[in-house]
Structures are given as structure tokens and as C-alpha cells.
Image 1 (cartoon, rainbow, N blue to C red):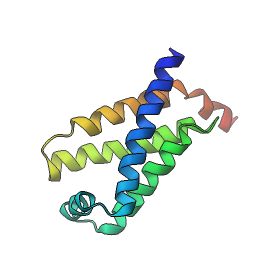
Image 2: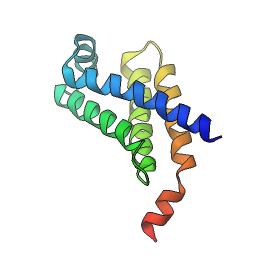
Image 3: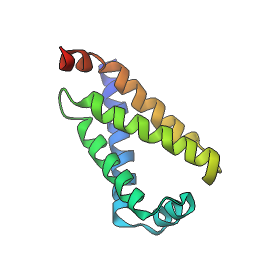
Image 4: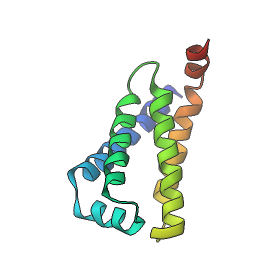
Length: 116
């Protein structure tokens, strides 16, 4: 099970670093996507920062649950944006969100120890 969790974390890190850095770098496709959402380009920077920070936190002992939580919530927003505005498929965002939720679940004990 530990190898599977490590593989999921590695996949999430690669996916979210790539997506987050492309948002922060202003890749044309990302700029166009956030234009279509209609909130403004500031939201692209916020989302990119959240994705990069979340990806890094996946590897910080005791903070994995926070990184995965950030990524899960971000993917919930991405699924909603795809279904309501962007199309054509929310499946990639849904898949990444589910994988992030698995990491939240496996590290949920970190939340209990942080509040105790």
C-alpha cells in the first residue's frame, strides 16, 4: 500500500507542478482558459500558486493532508468549471481530485494530531 501511495503522490506532484507552473508562466492555453471562465487573470495566478504549493506539501512530513486537501478542493472547482463553462470533459480534473482525496484519506490522522 505504501508504494501505491508514493506512486499517487508522485503522479500528483508531476501533474500539479506542470499545471501550476504553466499557469504562473502564462502559457497561452491557460490564459485562454481563464479568460473563458471570466473571473480574471488574477485567478490564474492564485490557482497556479495553490497547485504548486499543494504539490510541494505532498512531500512535507505532517503536511501532506493539507497539500492534498488544497488540491482536492481545487479539482472540485475545476470539475464545476468544466461542467458549467468550459467543457468538453471534466474527467481529468475528476481523476486528479479523486487521487488527491485518497491522499487526504491516508493522512487524515495528521489532522487529528494537529488539533489535539
